[in-house]
Image (tube, rainbow, N blue to C red; front, side, top):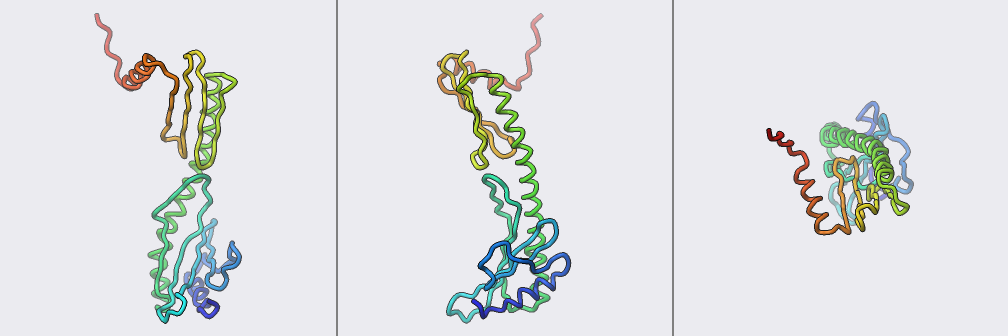
Length: 208
């Protein structure tokens, strides 16, 4: 791919203007077909050129962005990845790149920043939840695990309730919590379900 017009990528980056400029690629070994374009506050994206081997068709320009690294599982289907004919006039490429890539890229980058912040905050909240449960139900077998991808899992034996064992799980921003109870008697199961059914219901007025 050494014959592909890499200078075209550099001209395109230059035409975008401030704050965009060609910068060292964060990853080695790709200089024969792409350039990394850096902006401000950690923003940046790759301009790549591609032409299938043996093809006489137009050289294609492809773009994809760099984002903050978010621990655990995070998927954003709206992150832009565009493709266009590199042989088009430079002005047209700049216009389309701004409209089709840079605008949605800025929005996707901001979503990643917010997700990173939210998970950092939730990480402290998850640990506090785990320690609160272990203090509330002290048992030598009680423990918790907080993994970036799997989330928080707290295992709490409840010796006062017989053989009952509770597992509390939550992920990401702690908007949802899963509670698993094992070892319940049938009567305990009915009482748990009744308490969940009654949760949030108004308390009936006292009879005269």
